[in-house]
Amino acid sequence: MMSQGRLEDLRVKLDAINLQLLELLSERARIAQEIGLDKEKQGVPKFDPVREKQMLEQLVAHNKGPFDHETVRHLFKQIFQASLKLQQADHQKLLLVSRKNKREDTVITLGDVTVGGGKPMMIAGPCSVESYEQVRQVAAALKAAGITVMRGGAFKPRTSPYDFQGLGVEGLKILKEVASEFGLKTISEIVDPAHIAMACDYIDVIQIGARNMQNFELLKAAGDVRTPILLKRGLAATIDEFVHAAEYIVSRGNNQVMLIERGIRTYEKATRNTLDISAVPILKQETHLPVLVDVTHSTGRKDILAPCAKAALAAGADGIMVEVHPDPATALSDAAQQLNIEQFNRFYTEVKNSGLL
Ligand code: PEP
Ligand code: MN
Image (cartoon, rainbow, N blue to C red; front, side, top):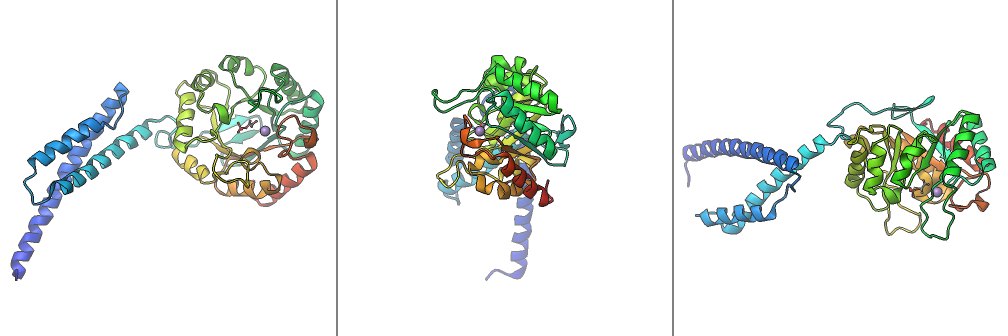
């Protein structure tokens, strides 16, 4: 049996080796970080499987035991992965939209309302602008409720080419006219990069729809203006893809970007999409941008809008978007999911009464 003194000696040696290993690992990590920054500049991928294979082969060729080759491979694979993670964390830190890059919340001012300033807000309005009178009726109801930011689609990205495509510029003109009459701010979707500059003359916020979240030319055009952008999460976009889409806009100089979760595609059929509530705190943590939740398109069901809006606000959302139409049954798009004015008032009161809005 090993004497107590010898055991102590060996343990002292192990402790010293642990510290040496730590020092070497840290040194290795610093070099890996430098390589990561260089790769970043050159635009080459961080993970290089060929190089990794070469390093492992070299290690195995020098392995004299007592660890077998598999164990040596496994141990070093762990070290390589940790280094790669470090390089990726450095990359995240470099994103302009990331919280690591800017600690303070980005606050966007829309008239008397701020988005992202700690006081949640509500955006409401019809799915599509259909007529002057239709928008006017919604505007009057919003004004009466105390809501000053109105949405309305003029360029509609529809699944079928035979469905109503929106009134186009005519729709933007209607929005502008009604908004000036009621003192409202407006949001409308733009689908063509060539329309971005023109849209700034008519609306206060340009929406980039879910189907266009990775339309990079559209994102670049949105980054070249100074009008606030409401960027919707793609139908099947990961949070990382969503964040990078926002980075496209901000990297061109437009830092007035709001993110909006609108549900993602899953196998669930009870709702139109699956509202990813967890995206809200994650996006708030990872970025400094305002984060909103579109309860209409995420659920596609009028009966659960209020609880979902409350859940979104409880999770830290800076705002809620909801669709309202004077006569949803006759709506030219999203007839099944828009609230009529009375339903909207009930919804708004219920959310307000929660104390979260
Ligand atoms: C919309 O808000 O009008 C819309 C089309 O939503 P999404 O892009 O989220 O489907
Ligand atoms: Mn809609």
